[in-house]
Image (cartoon, rainbow, N blue to C red; front, side, top):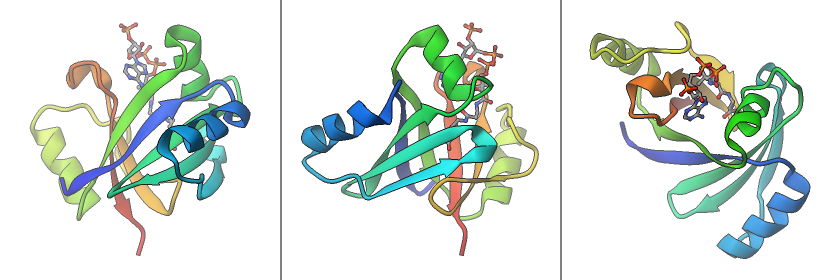
Length: 133
Ligand code: CMX
């Protein structure tokens, strides 16, 4: 794992959450992007080497909609950047973590991504991601 690439935060609405995080971080939201395969609308902020990703559900089947219904707004996942996502998926699987995808999928912000089930990482949803070059 190279670094924490971003922290994902589930929100009910970007319309009020973007201005709130712009005030909090004192930096503008630099990108909004819809990931239709995940039924989410995302908004990104740069904070040093790391990003904050706000996630709003765009459909009832979205993982974010289910999360908000069960837990309410708050921290949703931590994403670690890796050099080679295929090697890292293999390594993590061998270590006993449960991959939620067997092949990486395309995520927001030009990334290949894979999630690990939170039940096997102390209740924290982990994403690993690799920049698409
Ligand atoms: N962090 C910690 N725990 C979580 C969680 C999260 N983000 N989301 C769900 N859970 C918990 C559930 O509350 C549940 O806990 P209990 O067993 O104590 O009730 C447990 O994980 C398992 O839940 P489940 O019923 O098996 O599965 P869910 O339908 O809740 O789905 C998960 C959970 C993680 C498998 C699903 O959300 C998933 O596949 N996530 C990966 C994809 C994703 O999150 N996409 C949105 C972001 C996309 C992006 O960043 O672009």
